[in-house]
Image 1 (tube, rainbow, N blue to C red):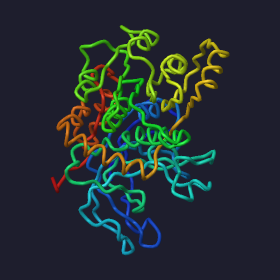
Image 2 (image 1 turned 90 degrees about the horizontal axis):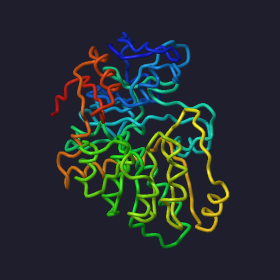
Image 3 (image 1 turned 60 degrees about the vertical axis):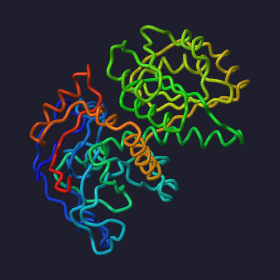
Length: 371
């Protein structure tokens, strides 16, 4: 069976590999589900793993099959599986449970373990292969109406979790009805966060670096949100123009912007959600006394969010469905590059590195016989 893999920790080693076929019996107690992969999305994480920045192979192996944004169809189920049946479309969750109390209650995204297991990232093979086998509780059933865009569910789940965490935290206020949100970053996660917040009826301003004309800006405006280029309008100028926001969702990958937003964009009783994983070494000077005073007197909150659990994937299915209903064709525009077949992996990685005009790169692994 073909797969796309890397030698973790070694730069530029992505390659086509031959691996063993999985079987439903690979999962104990008759609980295996064999999935044939239809398509897999690539993102910056895959690029960084190929650069050797991080990633870990499963124990006893020297390669890691990449790809954590999956979409496939169930080919076979074990005798004890009742949740799914042959022919169901599914998307797989990324993180597997560890040993902490949070893992044991179905929240591996909140694990306190130092070592974590994530498909295509750390210690577990990913989905850039022809088939994989999983337990049913790790699979999210997808309605046929979403089959063309469901590969976007995993990144959608990341935004869903961050926004859900904001609402959960704000239960402290007893009455919290946010009306205005800012999204920092207009990449894939920023676009999907904008979508989710608009689906909840919030007025949204999304900030990005590039100046219009810009396809991401057009996509944001198509949702009824506003787009602001930080090349044209600084954060302080934006605060004067738009006022402050009840919720700020950060997805920039540029940490200095966070400190500007903390004081300038966030309203009293507001919550700032950080979703970027920044592995650099940038430093900035901050007005620490003013920042501390503003957060204390304004009852403000800043929270980090990573990964997602089942409820966030399921929320993502609902939001993708709403968007397909009210903005048909919007989601398909996020898939800017489609590559046919695992053998074309080099083309996919080139598209991932091109930058300009790239939102989501997708590899079409197998045919959709049901479609």
